[in-house]
Amino acid sequence: MAHPAHPELARTGPIAFAGSPIERADQIRCDPEQLAAQMNWRARVLLLEDLLPQIDDTGALVWGTLADVAEDAELVFLGLLDEKPCFAAVPDSGAGGPAYAMPRAWAAMQQLSPEDLSIYGGARSLVDWHARHRFCARCGSTTKLAKGGWQRSCDDCGADHFPRTDPVTIMLVENPELNGGSLLLGRQPRFPPRSFSALAGFVEPGETIEEAVAREVWEEAGLRVRDVEYIATQPWPFPSQLMIGCHSMTDDVDITLDELELEEARWFSRAEVAMAMEDAKQDGAGEMAPFGVPPPTAIAHSLLRWWLETRT
Image 1 (cartoon, rainbow, N blue to C red):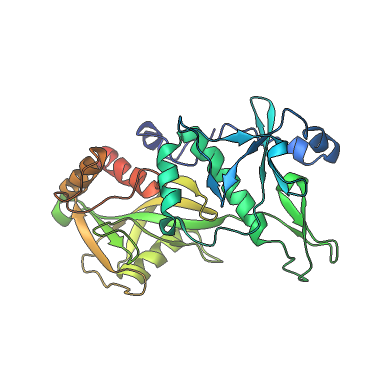
Image 2: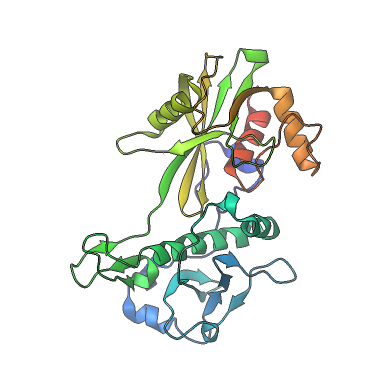
């Protein structure tokens, strides 16, 4: 398994949704005969309800069999787990909303083990993409599932379509001279009260990661950054992003807020960040902490932990 650019981030804890134990088995999904042979009594089907995981009394994912899905269901081949073929059924429609708008999704994420969370995240992204891409983007005709669910094909025009992942930069912005080292964090109107997180934004066509970081920070906060450094990535299945965690430096202090994107942006000292993280660790109400940190399932939480433990 690939390690992040900073091994010390891995030492501080796993990144949510990463590290799936499923072997993707490309050699099977690309071979129709081998794939058909997996559709037997040993096959396991990950049971989802409106794209949410079903969880048993022990907090584990619930797996069913092929008998638990409709005969005409589109089945995505996830791969092999303990040498057993694993599938997930494509729902009638996609989720149609980000994670923050789905309280049940947040609750489920807190229950699952890191391995189960990674399995669920990968399956959710894949079946959600299928549910939202039933028609050809070239000619508008109905598409059909191909290569075990890792492709959709159009018989009318011959176009092939593949599951997409959208790159998103999420970045810590540090001013090393302000209060002995401070971080810029922002809050969007949809965040819970007093909650702050790292700034983030989609990488646009024709941009490098470094350019996307600099542009987003300038657009949202009016700060010029330098020394952009990659830290780690996180797959984020709402619906399907790759969060690219970065750290950057700035010599600017004054914030010019983009009020269309952010409700507030502030500088927080190392002591304030440490207090907020400790409050989250103790599962406190957050009333004494200077702000509420992102949940542990978010890479922003891991980046804050990394900053406290490695930046001096």
